[in-house]
Length: 385
Image 1 (cartoon, one colour):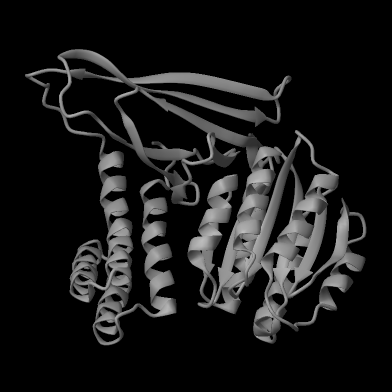
Image 2 (cartoon, rainbow, N blue to C red):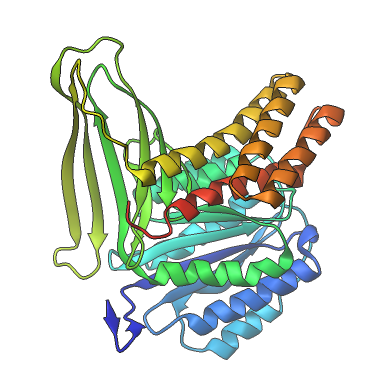
């Protein structure tokens, strides 16, 4: 919706920031987080609910959940943050979700942003169990990793379970823009708690689901309903599903799967809305020759690049260094053909690194993973899939 050239804000947010303040955050990293949090406070409006939790090996609620009514006082609390201790994400995440629960409501975007620059110790299973509980209550989690020391598979899982997003912030200076853009997108939600249920036919197997837009990333198919997060006013949710069909199929039309999409539309009364769609295809000996949609071909091509870096990592994990380096060299060639010269050079550098060390560098691994993932966002930037 637009009014006099300005977008009318659709949603109010119930936001908890869960911020790592362990020793490794000391200096520029923590300074930039403070600046970003100050700017987030500035952009929040009446009716928004806001809380801030810091954690190291303990958690501290420095701003209790409540309306944003005294911004200078909130900023002063943020300015007093200091870094110390180790990293235990569960304590911070648990406190953040508890703050969101205090104002949990169907007319709010209930969201936790977790920012960390390190590995957590011994509490990953507790964190994923907590994420499942949060998803059932309509709370989503976005996980942001700063630097190169954090566990990307773990943060991906947390986000995927709840319909949030995970992202790599490669420098302290990028924190401010990244956090502000993320909160702005939450404020532009048209519908919240979007869910996708997929029921394949008995002889059809659902192999994977990948969200192309917004915030490209693989989605968990092990939780029943697939959490999709928020539907923004100016961007569609675009999802690519991969099915395995039986080898022998009878001629004629046959169904593949039933899809049910549901969500809470803020402007509707009642809010909950659901649509159902059946996917089917025709099996014929003389198929009509037609070109597939260019948007799907483009997305598949770029998803292949993301899969290539995944397979290179899998080859290294199994000890096949030769296969891994070949896959990385092939990835570099494909990236160069797409005009992604800098990323192609990174892939070549990681191929050399793998050949000498039997592993990828922490920074290179994350850069290839998240930058090839972002290529999919470019496929969908027009939002017309």
